[in-house]
Length: 224
Image 1 (cartoon, rainbow, N blue to C red):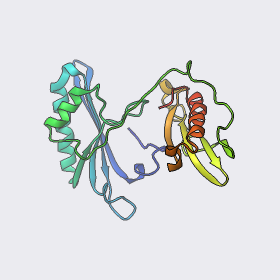
Image 2 (image 1 turned 45 degrees about the vertical axis):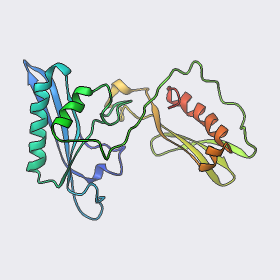
Image 3 (image 1 turned 90 degrees about the horizontal axis):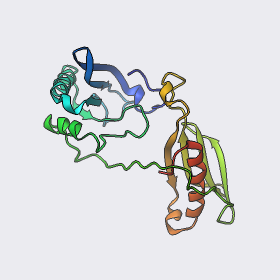
Image 4 (image 1 turned 135 degrees about the horizontal axis):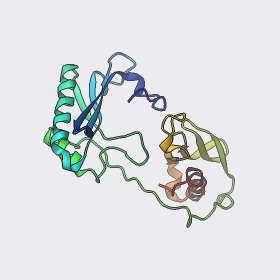
């Protein structure tokens, strides 16, 4: 609910935040977190003077409270005189990106309020146990080197040929946020994963697969 130092691109563009909660019989049954983005040359045009519902939650049996909180959130976006409104569901926890399929009641709330996903994207999040993942063997392509370096979010595994980095597997291993979120201490997941176009043709794709095994073992998760 405060600044997110790990989001070094969009987080500095936020100039105001607000969190709303719905309480029934001394129990929080709904909540929403809002952000107002500033304007100016350093802010991307797509975010300039935008208002965002960073996330909105409610229990499925408390939709009335969810509607009240969402209505209050939209009223606040209007009071901020923002030009465009966004809605997301990305909580600061593992495996939650956008509005998950397991939140159909939240999808219904947002759609009823006028939001839609026609300009959004679909992401598939996978996880699995490491017991059946074979340890990486020697480089399968001549001249391919796998190296471990310090990345933007933590450990980064790279597949390198000559001077070219042909694959990257970044591991985000700082979810505890310096110890402020102890429930996520010792947890990690895949942050970024990309391979050069030559991988699609089979060139160094095997090298990227071996690199995935290194990264998955470090993250404590199956390859995503």
